[in-house]
Length: 343
Ligand SMILES: C[S@@+](CC[C@H](N)C(=O)[O-])C[C@H]1O[C@@H](n2cnc3c(N)ncnc32)[C@H](O)[C@@H]1O
Image 1: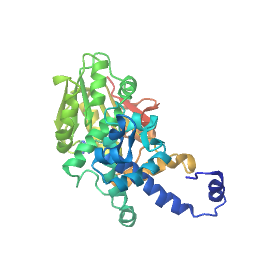
Image 2 (image 1 turned 45 degrees about the vertical axis):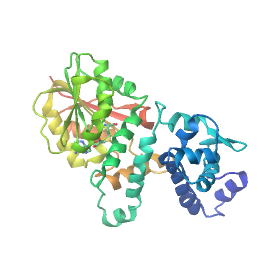
Image 3 (image 1 turned 120 degrees about the vertical axis):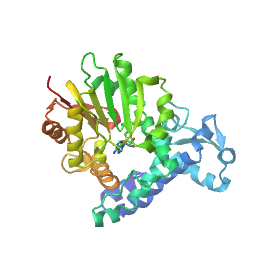
Image 4 (image 1 turned 135 degrees about the vertical axis):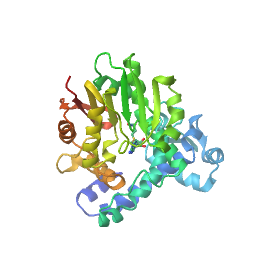
């Protein structure tokens, strides 16, 4: 947060009010980047250096307010200024231009909804009642949600597909809360005999269907609209079941019941792989990301992040044999916990 050694020293010595920096400056920082994405500012600059007036004209924004915004994007490393011209930096070119394969613009658009939930943190603190992330979303939010989730998979589906154990000769995969289906697509490409069912909520499927279609897998990867908490998955009909970044939406009891249903649906020798963000380990500065993520998931969903040992406990209780957990660099650290059904 400090922009020069003196500020750093003042913060370090507890002589200036860091809470104001953390919240007002931090909050403004967040909104400046998100607003720039929402009005298409980085796309407007993508064609080459442009003046504030030109950027405002291309974005359909007010010239005076656009001129006020641009220096904060320069100071934050998202734009570079040269005279009265602004251009992209490596950071914005990679992540915030919609034509980039790495673009996370849709995830930032979803964050308008997520920050709206976060503004109700005091309500959650008082009541202890999580706000249900999946109810109350408009059509636009569902769209950003599904697109944003797909955006976050870029560059890591191969790594995840390599790490998910699939039994030799497997033919059927169930992808619980699979959204866009990108992980199923990667697994089916890696295992030619495999076909996949991507189960997700009806609203999700409506918005994720065009995203899955982009991958051109035809019938090999198909959506199924439903609810993983209430649907029956059948008996001995899948060789592999995956659930990636979904268990944090479910409570301990729900995850236990779900794992029991999955165990029943697996064929002998089948594998259930749960992938989740790391849970925080103890206290301290190094845990900031994990602890904040855990609080966010607790507020916005049913539970929070889960440790591999807890995921293994669900598998053990369901009669599966937990394997050693695997930690991937994907998503800034993703834990994979697989449980195997005996033959
Ligand atoms: C955080 S996203 C993860 C999507 C995908 N697995 C990935 O890793 O990119 C969670 C997904 O779980 C779905 N979901 C949430 N509750 C569900 C339920 N009860 N049954 C089926 N899907 C559910 C959401 O609609 C959403 O698509």
